[in-house]
Every structure is written in structure tokens, then in C-alpha cells.
Image 1 (tube, rainbow, N blue to C red):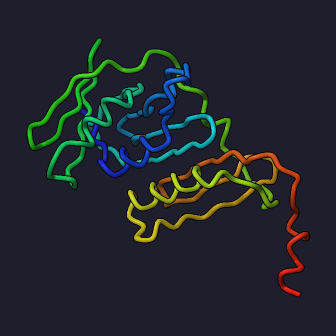
Image 2 (cartoon, one colour):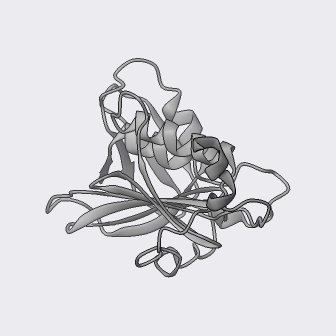
Image 3 (cartoon, rainbow, N blue to C red):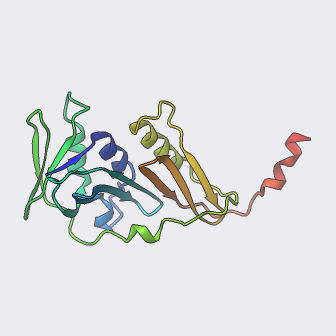
Length: 194
């Protein structure tokens, strides 16, 4: 049994691939890495990435797999008890999502290997200005709200033409890929202060 905070699952689901044209099936869900040492939830669509961690206990099953987006969507639609955790019960070939109010659904984990997300996380972006797709930034705002930020605030350290690092909470971080543009530089905007 693996306990998953509903709000963390909701936040992660925002970053899974949703475009039906995207054939990378492993991106159409949330990766769960669980053991008694802790639980990680990871999701990406190739443009943004969210990694979250949560404590576990000695009874937590060791399991790694991808919960498909449609199963997550169904679990998040359960009425009432929004503070109750979602419980993942690993199995083969099917797993189960359930909760203390009695709801349950079966799903087959997404087949295939999730990308090695650890290689994508930048060590220390240099803070060089970047151009980001506003729609991607809104996902981080919504995730921050899911995780308890009243105004959806988060920190962003840009890296120029390289990935930017996003800080949502001490247990949630993200990566955002910039848009390539040479149209403006920060110095080009100094006229506004003159």
C-alpha cells in the first residue's frame, strides 16, 4: 500500500502529457517511485517537469510505475473527502487506486520506461533572462495552489537558453524549458525607466 496525498497527485497530473498526438505513452501519466524511504511523484510533457517527494513509513510498498492520466482523472473526480489520501495498491497485471470512503478503481500501469528525469534537473541555472511560454508558467501557478500557496506563488531561476529551475515548496521542484528568442534583451528595456 502506498499513500499519496491527493493534492500532490493533482499537482503532478498538471504536468503529464495531454496531447493525444504525443505518442510517448510513458509521458501520459504520473511516475510513482515508492519505498519505505519515501515516495516520489514525477510528471513531464517534455516542456515542463514536476518532481515531488513525500515521507513514507515501514509499511509502504516498494513499487515503481506510471499511473495513467485517465485513472488519475477518475480518482481526482471522487466527491467529498478531498483531504483523504489516495491509496495505491500495487498488483500485477492490475493495480488499484482507492480511498477510505470506499471508492476504488483498477488500472494497468503504463508500459515502458519513464525518461530519466534526474538528468534534466539543472544543478544551478545562471539566472540569465529567459523567455517562457506563459501557459507553462500557469501550470506552475496552479500546482502551487494545489500544494497550498494561496496566491499560487513560486520561485523561478532562469537559465537563458537552458532549463529554468522552479521552486514550489521544500518538497516540490520543477523544470521549465525556455522558448528560444533573440528578439529582446533586458538592456533593450532600460528606456522605460528613463
